[in-house]
Amino acid sequence: MTEIQQNPYAPGVISQNSGAQSDAEVIRSMHLAHEYSIKSTALVFVVVGAIMAIVGANFVHESIFQVIGLRNSARTLYGAPATWAVWYFVFGLFLVFVGVAQCVVAYGIRNLKPWSKNPSIVLATLGLLVFPIGTFINIVILFQLFASKTKMVFSEHYQEVIQQTPHMKHQTSAATWAVLVAFLVFVFWGITMTVLSS
View 1 (cartoon, rainbow, N blue to C red):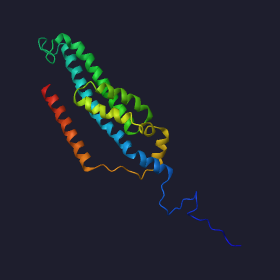
View 2: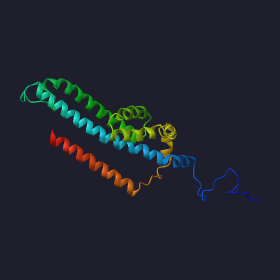
View 3: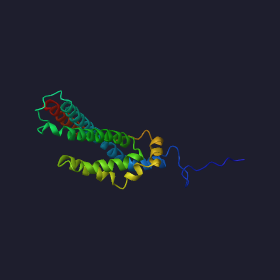
View 4: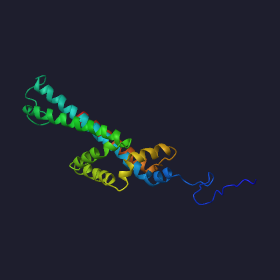
């Protein structure tokens, strides 16, 4: 009896040598650039969160020393009367809390955890108040978070797509790396100046 061979080019048949993409690869290729744009916002949240936590801890440290009298009671705290120490203490705790929250959310964003989307929107909205640099940066972040592809990127289904397509990577341009390095240098300089001037 003659064996009937299946035509690899017949409708509904994908040849292993045809180079056709799987459904997961098609979905990943459509969302890959946006996926990495979302993930890049995690770096912003980490850097800003770390700065806020450091500044907040410094406020708490200074206010405690003022309250327990280990420093000259006539000395002012950041240009304000020492009696304001309790308010600086509360404000410092608030900065530490928000800074830690930003780092936690950054972890979720980096791993595209669905729970991190709404907190990131809240934090980016608060960041609009930091005019002008914070306003510009957080407008860009909010634009990405409200984009049409964001819902898919943060979905459980997309997590499965990522697991099925580990070979697909986004290529970051040299210009992007240059901007990133310049941003980190600027942030490091700002932190250094803040610490030295305190």
